[in-house]
Image (tube, rainbow, N blue to C red; front, side, top):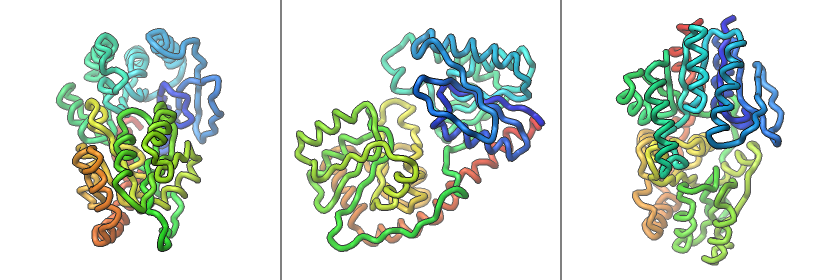
Amino acid sequence: MKKVTLSVINDLVTDNRVHKVAVSLQKMGFEPVLIGRILPDSDGVERTYRTHRMRLLFRKGFLFYLEYNLRLFFYLLKTKVDVLVANDLDTLPANFMASRIKQKPLVYDSHEYFTEVPELLGRPVVRGTWTLIEKMLVPKVNAAYTVCESIAEVYRDLYKVDFKVVRNLPVCSQLEKHELQEKKDGQPKIILYQGALNLGRGIEAAIRSMHYIDGVELWLAGDGDLTAQLKQFVTELKLESKVKFLGRLPIGKLSEVTRQADLGISLEEDLGLNYRFALPNKLFDYIQAGVPVLVSNLPEMKRIVEHYQIGAIAETHQRKDLAETIKMALFHQENKNYWKQNLQKAASELCWENEEQVLRQVYLQYL
């Protein structure tokens, strides 16, 4: 059986995309080994395939990336492997060196537009270093895929590599089917945001818009860097009765909450190309739950919403305009009925089972 190593820089626990790839490779007949790191507070991982986690001395900065890639390189050298998979740019140096020495094919899975992430903007030296690594190594991989068409187009133009698109969609066969819950008269409409409460997610704009909408609650399901700041913001605006902080929820509970929503929002701001090309997991969670969506006017999210006709596009984050768009999405019954019908088709098509066909194109040549 052909062995495939899949390297990531996280602790494996919450990286659902690479887990789904590993399971798909198993179904194809490969033997995957998932490699990451372990942190002091990391939970255990139980998988149907092998895992290996390295305990590092450093946690961030140059020495962290250097130590990780050196440790990974030596592990790959002593491991029997037929195909090496680098997940994101920060695992590519070690995989590239090992693939050249062992003369084995190297596949690159880019989970985001790495050199355009907000953490690198405003840090020209660090960003320049990663850009140089990308220019040197990406053109030399044997196969590659990424999470959306916009990023794939950029990489194809830059590096003349045929990047495929494998979106991070839910495994539909594992989803429980539930009847949609009907609201009782007098119950408030629910707007749901799920995900990290971090910069650039449009959460502040959604909160501000609540001043102009009656009979509605905004539920924030998640945690992050801005949690305390957002709670203070809500208090200052005297919106405690309209904005509810649910915290980080277990997957089962989050699914239950999502099904109660009347509108799911994904209002990412245009903070660099990585955000501009965003295709967040929460968008597909809303779709699978049969919840109409409101998204920013950014190309990848807009493409999904307009193709399936399952919600509205927010042309601006200006609070009064955003409030009017939200009211239209929540209270225009004809639109809601139309979107609800289309959500059934979208949910049946936007599944990991369909994305697997692209993975088969990439990997079956190595069996």
